[in-house]
Each structure stands twice: as structure tokens, then as C-alpha cells.
Length: 176
Image (cartoon, rainbow, N blue to C red; front, side):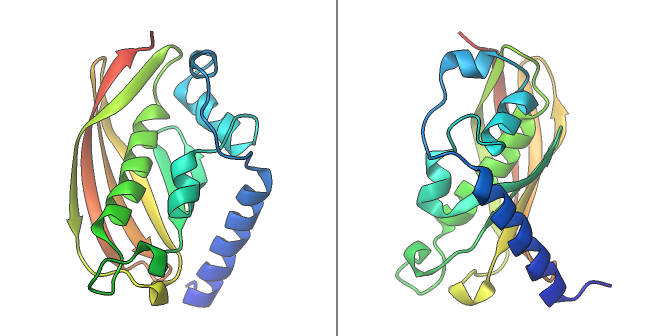
């Protein structure tokens, strides 16, 4: 059984390795999007061959694991993310989960296909604060068809406690 401290050490090591490879934030070109499958595109971002995603810098989270149909982002919320009541704003949960579930859908799309979120349903289970430490949002594909993709996600801490869960419906379309 892994302790919280062992899990946190592993998470921090993974985060360091990813951050060392990420390129500065920016926006990929349409040619970059069309050059390969969704997973190929995501892997190029993670390998630093394409710009990292600006929202990740704004909200302080990064991708730490990925395979077709499953993507994990890690973030460490702090007071910059607080609402007036002294806990992390719901928008942080939503942004982190939207990234995880959306990228999970993207990761299984073939070359020439894109997606956009049509609906995101998020249930907040417990508050996040700066004392929580790093959290992970894992997105998993439920089903992806020719026009619609469905995925689910969860935010957990290093002890496996659930903070939020989500489902998404994405529109799948040919890239212009």
C-alpha cells in the first residue's frame, strides 16, 4: 500500500519531468492539428514540440499521464484560485475537469477530426484549499462515435479522496 507521502513524491517527480519538456504557452496551428491523430497532437504538446496550453499556465495545471481514452492533469490550487468564501472557486474544478475529459475524447480521434465541449456537468463533492496540495483530474472516454463523444472525470487528492466528478458531451467534427 502506498502512503500519501509516497504518492506525493511520485506526483511531484512526474510533474517535474513534464514541466521540463513543455514548450512556452501558445496556440497550435490548424496544420498542427491536422497532422496526426488526437493522441499524436497531445503527445507533441507534452513532448514540447508544440506550444503548451495557455490555460494550464493561467490555472497552474499540466498533463501528467496520457494514453488513448485516458488523460490525467495535475494542479496545485492556491489562494489565487479562491472564491470570496476562502476555498477554491468552482471554476477551477470545472476548468481542470473540462481539460481532462475533453482531452480524453481528443485522444481517441483519428487524424483530421476535432471536438468541442457541448455540455459539462460537474458535481463538487468537497472543498479544495491550498492545504489540499496537488490534485489530479482523470478523464476517461465512455463512448466516442462519428459525431458525439462522451467522457467522465474525477478530481482526487494524493490519498484518493474524491473532490469532484464530471461528465461531458462533446461534438466531434471534421477539422476545416
